[in-house]
Image 1 (cartoon, one colour):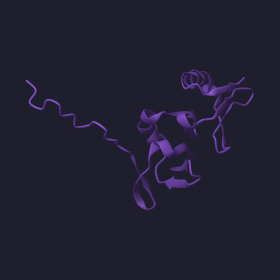
Image 2 (tube, rainbow, N blue to C red):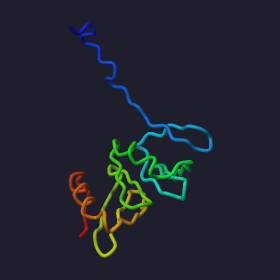
Image 3 (cartoon, helix red, strand yellow):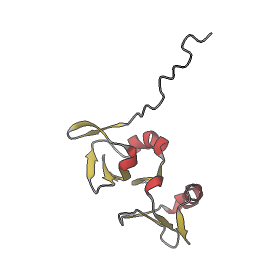
Image 4 (cartoon, rainbow, N blue to C red):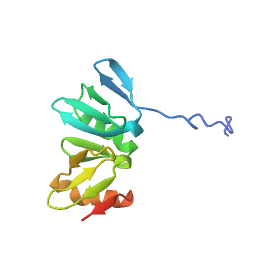
Amino acid sequence: MNTFLGVTPFENVVYLPRFQTKNGNNTIDPKQILFLVAQGNYTLFHLKMGEQVLTSLPLGTYVSTLEWYGFVRIHKSYLVNLDCLQECTIQRFSIVTFPNGEVVEIARRRRNKLKRLFEMHQIIFNP
């Protein structure tokens, strides 16, 4: 017997991940993140408004958290938001392009997996 009929405790609740920066723990909406870049043991967040935020943890720390928000690792140094991609070019050097003009290279070993993911997200391809 359910004594809490009609109660949905998690309805319309958005949980945003917290990221440790030099100013302490900050909450960044994943929808505002274009991509993340590994910089040694640090990670640089590139945001839609052109802002960059440096965090004190390596890129691998964020992969499992941000995969739930549509992020994919396209290179050992890059984690990108599929919803923010504008275009994907697969030629001798494969790249993805963001609306702000930023270009990121795709690792050769990740091309086929990413091509399938991009097709599911209906990102424009230039073969």
